[in-house]
Image (cartoon, rainbow over all chains, first blue to last red; front, side, top):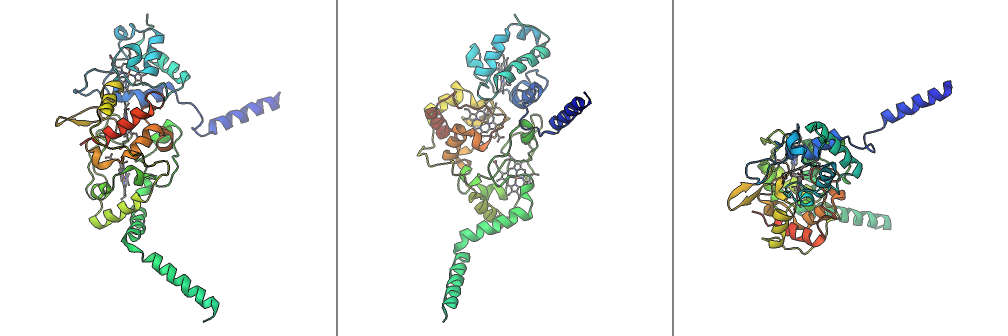
Length: 120
Length: 222
């Protein structure tokens, strides 16, 4: 038993010491890196790319009214295929070849936390 | 003359002629010395291949990589920029909130010429002559504007007005800055040059023909 505990402790220590590479990014990291440039660091649709000359503003991810119109499937489709996949503006880019399916689903959950809404 | 002497005289002659073979080579060596003396490498990776594997790796970088500079830039661009650097990225490197106010290290004309020669010697054999002609390519423009909206993150000149997003390097004046073959390689083979970046990977979303048209259009931008 004691040896078993030791083994787990050593394993945990090794895992914690592993370099960041090889570990998947968290939804927070992905959002701040890929999405915040348009949707803003707080998700309010006010990132640096939301300049006046753009024809469409990025969605405010904190707005329950706007985000409730989307099903979980809609959100996943929009992230993977961009605006073209949900008949919205192509200013929303496709990330299906950049993020893994698991990362996209975690981002969907992250958006649900931002809007504090469940969708239709 | 003994044969050993003949060989050493021959060796010296060849070595001397190599050392003295024209100003181009001298510029590369001098440029490299300036690059090292000014610690440019503290912010710029000058030896490939790409090392970043995660977002954390990318965020730890202090400047864009230069290990393929000779494939990326148009001849003549770096000399001018290094002597008089103007912001290329509207935002500070790796920031989505702070404006880039300039202030990049500046070199005198002689240093700039040598460092440019050194940087132009750093090429990638993943960039091959593609025969794509830079210019006002209407198909490329259609992809850039209406198909995938590259202007969402990149500035460009549209009828004398600068429009577009700020998170990517500005494409205003890209015709003087970027080599068309590199842009094509960057779009078709992003893993080689920039495996982790906040620009989406478009391989599998737009095809090679469209990427060739895009490369032509981008490197035709004034």
